[in-house]
Length: 493
Image 1 (cartoon, helix red, strand yellow):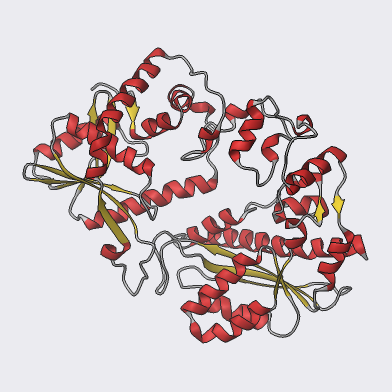
Image 2 (cartoon, helix red, strand yellow):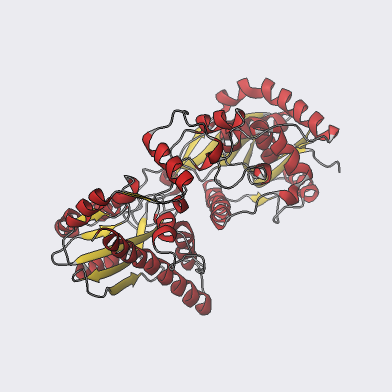
């Protein structure tokens, strides 16, 4: 059976950038390594796709394996269509050297209905281009496509008891939207095929297209010429302005002209880079510190966001707190005392989480967090879902103050922070002896993935190890806050 030149994924890559398509086809080994977060997103998409099959039960799977055996999938799809099958999952089609695998196909008299399943909560332009290509392939084979729908997640669905798939998923016909795209699909297919047959890498420089609609899979590969301390480190600067500098030949921060118009934050960033010395606004730091009331509670949460709600009274992608770490300092000179909580998997963690947190933080004194919007939003969500705790939660929220402010407002800024005021940028600058580098779980996204994996993990050794790693990570966040505050106090008092 003839092999394919293009697939759905490579077609979408070509729309983003012809060089992306070429590299994907002929230099696959040069692709940037997938992050654990990206792997989790792909796995989530696959799991949602399998769940959505229950909307059209009784189907047969055509394409199997990862990656599938495409020849076998094409053959199996043909057999099922010619047989008695009414529903096919992962149906494979090829036309004009373009391969398409449809998530769900329902065969009816005089044609078929096609369903593409997405784990997102809305329909994007990329999804329409994906659907348009599938229509091009299937209809090109002489098959009548009676309707084409995208199935996506309803983020307003609230779970009550067993999953209601009819409410969890939204099925929306996009046939009227993809029919007008058929001419451009054909033109792009012809363009991409010529590019791939020619086997010459397109001469395309980096630009805003590297980020849209997704970060390119060869992002690092195409940026080997970008030095450390580049204009791409400017924080908060619009991409278009960064690429304006780049296209003017200004790449290194040291090459930015003295009279180049920058906002106040970028001016500070550039000044500190050039001086090599931190900026310290003693008066502003002292004012911030003087407003803190001991005992201080240093608090951090971790959350996970299952696409499919696991617990009653929760929505898709709702951030569910499952862990906290709290350090308490009775006064400026006392040692910090540590408290922590990690929920058991398989049950709704929110009630035990909030009961334990309220118990530990009860009393007087300010509660310090890093980026208070996150913690306050999570607490308000729990108060909404579990109103019996609302009064206590409100009192806790009234005590929260944000340790991020001195860094966000540039009361303290060091070259090592590279424009960022996240705790992972601040910690190496102020407290270099503490580091996330040695931790297996070293950022919130990984913590979320790890805890979600516990919901289905049965190996007790693996469960114990993941729990240990989660506790170490969350403790590092709050210990880092303790040390950062102590270092600020040393600077100005």
